[in-house]
Length: 274
Image (cartoon, rainbow, N blue to C red; front, side, top):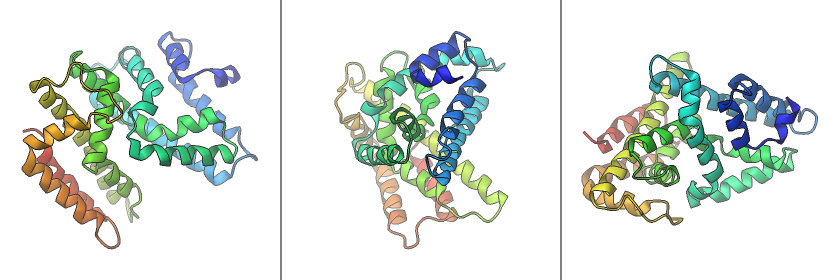
């Protein structure tokens, strides 16, 4: 297992596709790297990072159970999704919204200061974005070659920022929950928010395609914001309603609660294509 420490994410992905390591071995490898910091990094920080990784595993597992082809063939799904996810891992620095890069660099620096290696710190700060990797690969497939995965990722993440979906998921993570049913409600709302983001990204791409802006589109650091604004101009009423809702939520004293999250989730459905 120790030799895996010196492999890049893309190398590990290729090893999985060739059957040289299993997903369980890869999971054990990642956990072992964090546990190896015992006595070097604060225990509470190690636990937080393990929980963060656990969220990624849970999200990916539930996604494939819900969306993978039936009968479920894990090896085939690795072949299908692995290359796209590996490309996304290599390209994250160029697809993450500019507004987020400062906070990510600061978080990485904090982890390194507490004893995490730069490579492990980079993987950890990327976890929130890799939660969406299967959706992004599937959207790229649906686009049928008109847009590559890097452009799709730029638009996907920009959609999350533009319509407050990232902010709502962060607010959901911070809710104090009193019982199991409230946790189920929050988990369901968060899953819906990911689904809204995927459907909105597909709608933005479809609108751009109709107006001749998809193939050979601008790949600058703006990250597809021109395509999003083009979509907004054609869906002005729904976009303005969503913007007003998010403004009200952001300015509510005491922050978002479960009822507000539920209302926001329902109202954001109005943005989705019929």
